[in-house]
Image (tube, rainbow, N blue to C red; front, side, top):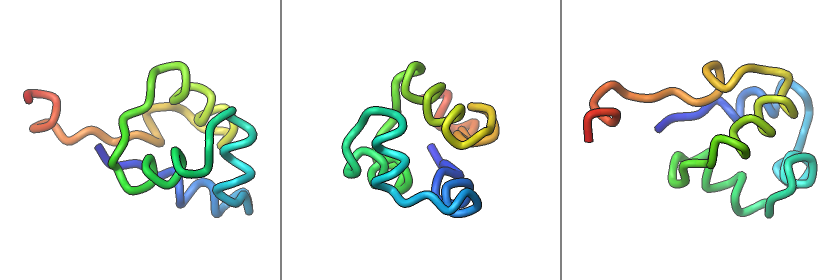
Length: 69
């Protein structure tokens, strides 16, 4: 799964640490999310979307092949 977290976070001038605090996770979680190495729970995805003033669908991009795995 790809994400636009880094791009949207930069637009809002938020550091990884600041975003992590807003959504209640560790900075490492944001790092893993930005690298596509971690799939968030729906609750966390929602919190991130709200913190980035966006929609879940605009942040998390699924490859059709990944959905069939």
